[in-house]
Every structure is written in structure tokens, then in C-alpha cells.
Amino acid sequence: AEAGMGHIELARWADAIVIAPATADLIARLVHGMADDLLTTLCLASEAPRLIAPAMNQAMWRHPATQRNVKQLATDGWQLIGPAAGDQACGDVGPGRMSEPDEILEAVSRHFAPPITPSASAPHVVITAGPTREALDPVRYLSNHSSGKMGYALAAEAAAQGARVTLISGPVNLPTPQGVERLNVETAVQMHTAALELAPQAALFIGCAAVADYRAANAAEHKLKKTDDQDTLTLTLVKNPDIIADVAALPDGQRPFVVGFAAETQDIERYAQDKLARKGLDMIVANDVSQQGLGFGSDDNAALLLWRTSDGSDRLVAPPQPKTQLAALIVRHALTHLSLTSSGA
Image (cartoon, rainbow, N blue to C red; front, side, top):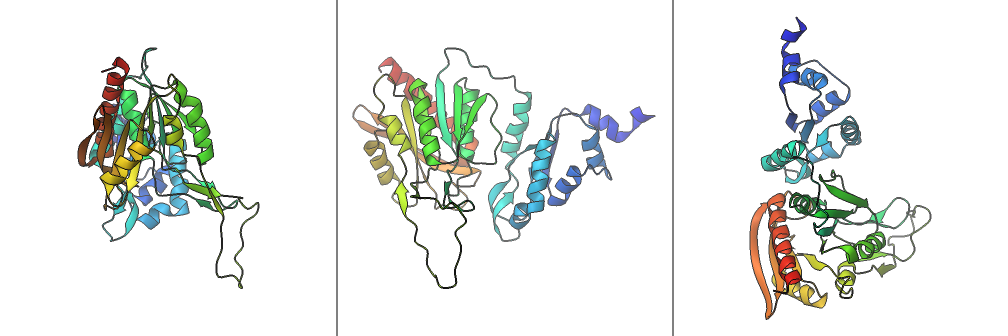
């Protein structure tokens, strides 16, 4: 009888399907509805939540066919977990590493967590995340290596702690955390406009985005062409608005508690102290992006937290850890200091 078929029994029994690791071949077969082994047959028969953690060589991950297949999986209802970027077994470095087990477990747990409904009295937290893109022409742009993972982890953690969260996101390939309102932007000017519109109604502002410092003075209307008689190209760049400084400069009554980020490659604490004072921030999170396996594109990070006190500043060193854990630490400290500031302590 059909009820006794193994794949049907498993499909009905499972509360969720998690595939980790998932190869490029398996992803392609799932997209095309293949059912020639137990796993693909189970996936086709199950109506449970389905999560998948890709793992493959960086070139295979970047291949247009894989990217098309991944987008189709998302359209079909699969939730992607990762992949991470870093050293690979083949010796390459780049995106394609399977996400860490704790991140996979967290993604599964979110499916079964009760919906987060902030109370009317919950603090409003505004977070910026991801990179910005500054067009040079219709094809090319200036950007950076930010994946948005740290900002998204902060948004997820703030929502989990009961805050009302608005996430202003640059272009990233990440799902919106549960209970978070997401506003997509592309350029630094767009992010600046959104931040100054939302910050006056917020209790806490966390500027985690890797915002481009400069943009093209005049983006070309058509694609810039390479010519045989031209070995160099001169671009005129103009400075972008300073989002975190402008939020910190809001007048009393409109100014939230402001947390900034500093991605540095040397003299981490000295540059962070300077940025904390120069931009008028309440707290800053500094990390050394020159460390291999940490920072941009990675699932892990380490940080130095600095915050203002009545007689100067205080500090906390957070060792290397998953960004989800670091996000919990940062949000706890920010909300604690926000509470102390609000109470006048």
C-alpha cells in the first residue's frame, strides 16, 4: 500500500527537511523535480519547511547556472542557509563553504519559534546593514565585500529580544529575519535619506552598513568603453554623506542612542576611539578585517566594544565567535546602556 512506502512515510513524519551540505548537482536536481533516489523523492513528497545549506567550490557557486538554480529554489519555497566565504578544501578562497552547524540550527529553530509581535512600548531599533553600490555606468559600480551578515544578525537578535526593528539594507543575498521590517536601498544617499527619516522615531540606531565613502560625480549614461589608445581611466569622485555622524548630530528629543561600527586593518582601538569621539557616538564596535576568516563575508567575527562613560570610555573585548553570538552580545550591551541613559543613570 502507498501508506507503507518509505519516502511517503518519511515525508509525512518529518517536521522539517534540512539538507547540509548540498552540492551544486543536488541543487540542480531539486530545481528540476528529479526523484531518482530517496532524498530527492522525499523532498518532492514533503510539505514540511525545507532548508538547504549549499557547499561547493567558489567557482561552482558563482556559476550562472548555480545562481539561477538557487533563485529558483527560493521561489519554490526553500530557505537558503549561507553559504559562507573563506578557505575551501580545494585550496580556493571565496563563497561556497557550508554554514556552521549552529547557524543551521538557528535557522531551523526560527521556523518553529512563535511569531514575534513587539508590544507598543517596545523600543524601536533602526539598523543599517550590507554594502552600498555607487554606479559608475549602467554596468559597473563601486562597492565593497560586505555580506550584510553582521547587520542581519543584529536585526534578528534585536527582534528576538522584543524590539520593534527596522532594517535598512543595501543589496545582499539574505532572507529578512523574522519579525523585522526591511527597507531596501542601493546607494549611500538613499540609505542616508532613509536613516534620517527613521532615526528620530527610534530609541536605538545601529549603523552596521559598510557605506561607500565616495560616489561618481557624474555616473555615465552609457557603458564606459575601453579604447586601444587609452591605458588609464580617470574618475572624479565626490564624498557621500556621513550617515552615522548625521544621526548622532540630531537634536535632543530626536536623537536615538547611536552605535557605530569601524572596520579597520591596523591600530584598531586608536581609530575606534577617534571615531567614537569625532562622530559623537555613544558606542562603537571595532573589528580587524585583516584577520583571515573574520569580518567581511565570514560567518565569524571578533570585536572591540567601546562606549562613553561619565569619565571617558569603557571597553570590552569579544574574542572570535559566530556573528550570531556576537550580535547577541552587542544588542544586550546597547539595550542595557540605552536603558541606563533613559533612566539618567
